Every structure is written in C-alpha cells, then in structure tokens.
Length: 340
Image (cartoon, rainbow, N blue to C red; front, side):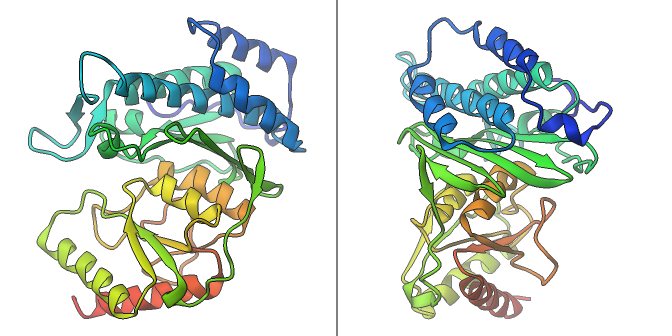
C-alpha cells in the first residue's frame, strides 16, 4: 500500500468547486469497471435530487465510490470458490483483526480516485495506516481530508455475517463535513452534509430525541478487539450496569459505523464504545458517521471524560438526545469506577 497521506497546498475555497475537470477524472476512473453499476444508477440520482447546496461534486464522487465498494463486497461474498472471504490477520498468526483482499482493493480504488479527482486533498485510509505501522495521522485543519474505511465490520464480512459497510467522510477545517455510508446487504445509502441534513436512500432521516430515559432506550455497542482480562472486566461491568438499570435493549452490532448510522436514522437510541485499549474506534470509524450524525441531530460525547468529542477521541456516547447521552455516560463511568 502507499503511504496514507497525500498532502498538497491547502485551499479551503477549492473544496466547494464543482469543476468539470473533476467530473471528467471521475468518469475515467470508473470507466475501468467492466459493467455499469445498477446500484450506482439507483442511488446517484436520488442523492442529486436531494439538492445539497455545497460539496456537490465531493458527494457525487463519494457516493459512486461507496456503492461500487459495496458491490465488490457482495461479489466477494458470493464467490463460488469460497464460502466466505478469506482474511489475513493484521495482529499476527493468532490474531483477531482481519484484513481481506476486498478491503485492500476497495481502499485502493477509493484512494486512487480521490487523489486523481481532488489532487489538493489529503486521504487517510485504514488499511494504508495499518501497512504503515498502525499510527493514525492527525488531520491537518488547513487541508481538506478524506477519511476512508473500505469495510467497517470486517470480522462480520469475513464470516458472512451481513453487518458491514463502506464509510467515506470528508473533513473541512479538521471537522467532519460530509459523510457517505453504504450498507450493501440492505442496499441502504446514508449521506449527510453537516449543515444541510442527512438522508437514507433519498429520504430525510433524524435521530430519535424522544427516548431520553435509559429504560426506553435501544443501546448499541461494540467490543472491538479487546481481549485482556482488565478490558473484559470493564466491558462486562458496563453491560451489567446497563442491564441492572433496566435498559430497554442492548445490542452488539460489530460495526461502529453501521451502529452510528442507525442512531442517526432513529432506529436505535444510542451507541457507546471505547471502554478499554482495544475497543477504541479510530478516525475512520468516526468521520462519515459524525458528519451524518451531526446532520441528523445526534449528540456526541466522550464516554470517559467531559472533554469534547472529536476525531481523536478514543470513546463515545452518541445518542438522539443530550439527556440520554449524559445518562448513558454517567451509567458507564459509575460502573468503570468500581473496576479500577
């Protein structure tokens, strides 16, 4: 893989420019595909019909890329010569952090297309970061930066559990501004521009602000790759606290991005993660989901502190209302104190 960043002289004004040259480059990149994508043909017109006032070209590029990556996931899962995509393990022979050929091919397509179409933008990709030693670069606020997860939920993907998505986000001034999340299994495309609203398959979505009490809340979470004894105790303590608080529902989805998209769409009330060292999501888990969540009314807090949430945060309590986010954080923090 190439290095994860492609920095150039930053110019904020260039981000909003919908140039014919950019669209031409995009067309060249997609011409390499052997057939016209029926999913792109379904979704791209719906997104254009939304009428976003800003970032139109960026949104069109990201939608086409996300949908084509999703189609690649479905093709890999349906391959005749394997019951499930065969992974490599990024954390060693006996590891649990998988990486498939589809992850790598998807990210290569996205990075190459974004670099060609927006040469003054930076690009951060999960797999490129893994190849470079795992360190996540900080986003340069002066440079428009794309953050990509070619498959979020790779554990699910490589075991044929249909709960994984493609995530492409764009940061402006260091803050998520545009998000595209595609769930190929349900053919659901979530898009949002932070100041203009969020949509799923062309229909406006909003977070559910009505469920402010924990006993009315459907709470989603993930355990990531945390397998240490201390981490297991901390995660178990939080789950126990939620059950004893009579939480309406607690579910593990296995994809942080998908879970946050469902909170943004009002399907779930809240999501939390980041209770110990290896269940901490990264910028590629946050970026697109944060833009869509902001556009749909989701509140984002850190789970472990009052420090404001941002792309570097290791934890989150995200909810459809500030009241529920605070209640969830308080419940988790009280449980964690007992384990320390």
